Image (cartoon, rainbow, N blue to C red):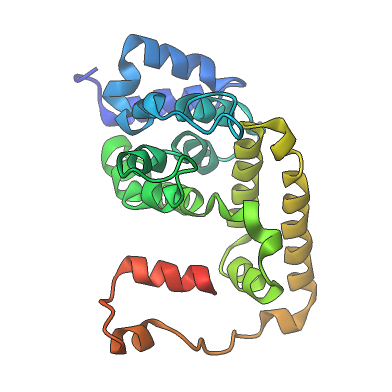
Length: 239
């Protein structure tokens, strides 16, 4: 495998992800050791045991396999890669002794992911950036109905239609990969997001620039916080 080009590896894995049941090919990669050599961030998820009440499938790796199987045939390339990589942050979260639910795993998994995908698998910048976006935001649809409408509008207003649909596609696959009694209500979350998105498009007032934020990067810097990418993400999450 060390003699095979990165582009060839990318194409072969993508061919697997485009099959009706990618888990078959991915499990063969795992059994032969190819997964560890080509996608070590995914392979290490075999050692991440999940909360059995939320994930009867057992490990984060099995969960990821089921997620790739649960995507619709029309799923674009970026969503297929995101389904495979969406939980890689859980390995780091466990290593950091975080909770079983691996809070913040989305951010941990997304940080630096686009660069990794471009260098390791030669994904295009556009696809790699979309995968990182999807992984970073994949938990938000679980909680959107708890957002106030201004926060939800601000969040949706920063996304393209393609990003919204890709995120909802990934969300449904993620939900389908866990406890079915918990995944069924997520259909309501998907519809809630789509209804709000449609409302925003039909309401000219929804497209006005948002009022200036009371707390922004400049304000926090004056208070002594060091400017960083993480600080900006926290501000974005707050609004």
